[in-house]
Image (cartoon, rainbow, N blue to C red; front, side, top):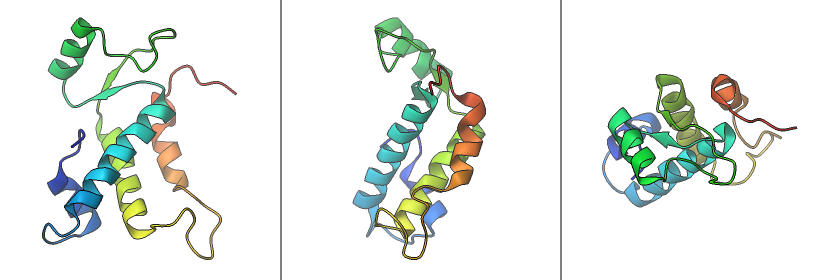
Length: 119
């Protein structure tokens, strides 16, 4: 499980019970990877986890072009949970009758935390 607990994901998606735990776990892991890609930096649950990764030399997404990692903030957590809930509700690439693949507000939440943003 990623840096968001399964209980938190269940609460966000209004899931009672463990019947969708495997799917929710996959969504949380995917949301973390997606957000890290948007931010161009690794996210850690605690400062201690980040410090350990720095010491181990595993704290950056790309060792050739390293970017500083970040401890999860409430804004990053909210963006990840929004993605999890969106993907839980819309299990296709695009929701019927819409043209939006990912909630636009997720990008807005993450914009200020991005590093090394290209074109």
